[in-house]
Length: 537
Image 1 (cartoon, rainbow, N blue to C red):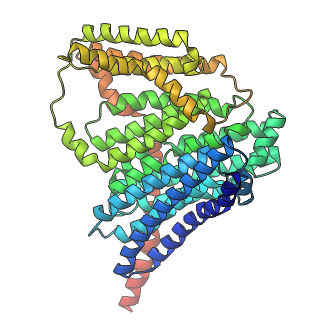
Image 2: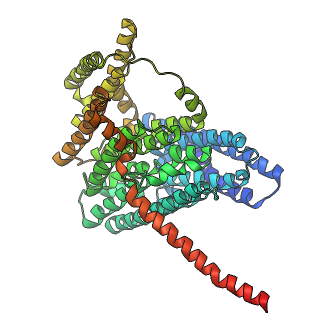
Image 3: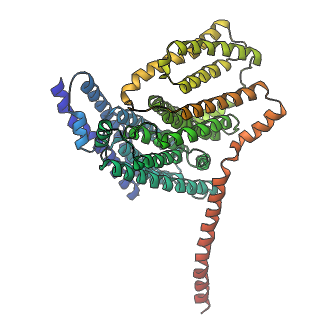
């Protein structure tokens, strides 16, 4: 069995590597040709390549299972020689990216029929996907940094497909500025890691980190730069304005952005956290910024009249939660969050028309607030008892326990009036089951994310985490208990505008856009005068 697995390892790895290269070549050809028949054929070939990418990824995953449970297949070592990092994280991410890309491609093939941007969409879409796959596969940090930059540049062309729309141009400018700063941070972080470890190869870094755990200024500075890069990529406050404006892009582009690109800040840290020595300044940045964004984003999302804007705020908030979890060291939970959010958000955008129709349906009647509070508190108390008896379900982490209790409380609080007793008990049982369910999922995905030796969440991190969770719970309850009070109405108005935290960066980019526009016009003026003088002569 092991001999067969070893013989299959090299072909599977080569297929894994060749398929993203094929996507890039196909992107170049589709950008060059103007033949409609050949372009249509490119769409079909792209779908097949993504399907084969899923097959190759499943084969790699199966071989990794054989390697872990039945015996050495030599797969990881062969992958490292090819510059690949064949592990559980790469397999799950590659499978998710290829699947979402395949679904979006099939959707866009019909959605963009007759649209003049259809021909420009395909090459940049394939380039973005190929860059994401290279970023996921590679074990060389220089390649990772190059793929990170490639994703940003290719996505910029997708966001500006409709160049005649002012909001799209402003969003693209904001995204361009944020991306270039993020790119510089990733490159700087990679160079600092090289300064500390003396290599760009991730397996060597991980081995050196496991052998001798010692911090340095370079390592701490690298954590800060990579945290800033993740904050910018994940549209965290106060750099989230561009995400609210990219709704001007076609729906397939929005689905790709929200499901397959914006989460790369989280992936960056899930890939690199083993090279850091315990809790770093970068973890603190992720904990604080991610927590603030999660609280503001969740509250603002619930007050948005537009479905797409609500989805955008939801994405920013969920990415905030993901970075918050990484900052706490809950890497497995952050990885689960990344996968679940990607699949959910791709479906939400591709089915946004159905969501609009569903939003017009009259909501269920709510039960009295006092009744809902009493029942929700009782059910949350049962969940608290379970976590008290089995704290390992939440990794003995008080902040994770508080988040889980809030989720149980919120799920039960939403049970409408008129629900039958048996149905109410069943729904409450499902809510309480979140605690053991999280423990089971953590056990299932735990082997994918290796534990970080020496990581201890400091007291300041615990306090920040509990304050964030407590603030979200308190404000939400206040708005539910006294929704018509003057304070609640005033607070809801400010919440609907995201507490105006988008304004500083908006004002900077608006001034920059005006400056660039004036400069462009001033450059045209001498040319116009010269042309007029030539005509007069």
